[in-house]
Length: 378
Image 1 (tube, rainbow, N blue to C red):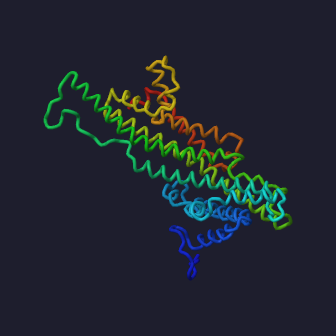
Image 2: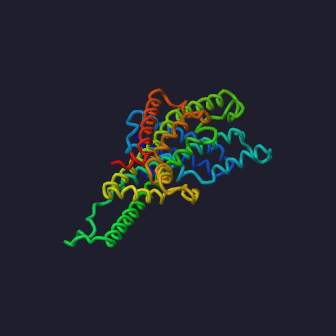
Image 3: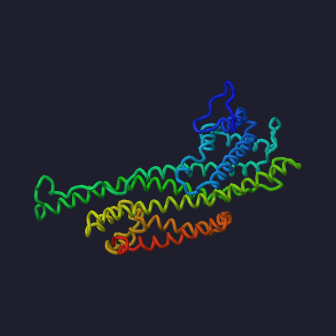
């Protein structure tokens, strides 16, 4: 507290404290010479761990489901990765270690290649999470700004006292109205679906990170040096990684479920709005809308029935159908239960209870939205 910018010192980036900015820039001095790149990466990872631990402490002391906190959080490490660190730092660090491994006479270094690969995995683990968090915040902003319900409009031919005609003219007018409505919905659905897709893909990349997100692969043989000091540093690093992993893996899982569940709920509002506007014709309008977002449409045989088979498929395969997103939300149970990346090991009892409750809710919602009778019966 009370850390002030010194005379002549460059002003910190917006939203970054002078202390945080000074820590970032101190590492930048190590990036000017290629032979210092491995040590720069060690220091960069150390600073990123401190940022994440501070974020975890702030989240633990507040409301971990506060969307506003999610928007404000992790700004400093994002600035550090995106604006302070040189783009080629990782390549330079790997190249320097490789030259040391090759025994070049004019090259020195104390970090082994196995340790460097571990540091590389650590850096990209954190970088991937920061990018996923950015996509998550963009999703929250986008879905809050995009209404699932269109503005009410007067019935055709009821304007200006004109009476609705009968026959073919009415049929054409109704069809034009449905097509205009569907195109309007396609525009808003595209915004939400694309934001949700980017956020969910980025978060899943975190959860499926090769070798496990922030899993420490270092051992005594890969420690950055020898002796008591190096062992203590390695032990402290391992402890920090475990603490960050325990804090952020459950957080990433809940963020991903939040994206999938909110998207499904938004699309359910589209369903209700459409059924309320077109009554008996509503299901046909919705199926046409779903068909516009169906990734599996091109793979279906032309011999498939266009009736119930297509209908039952669309309500779970179309990205504009709430069932598609509820199904993805429920599949998180398998992702977390998979022993491959040890995700479930990071959950405490309260977090696991909360997760299982969300899975039960997603199961109930999927049952409702994967049946055309219950989905369209509103």
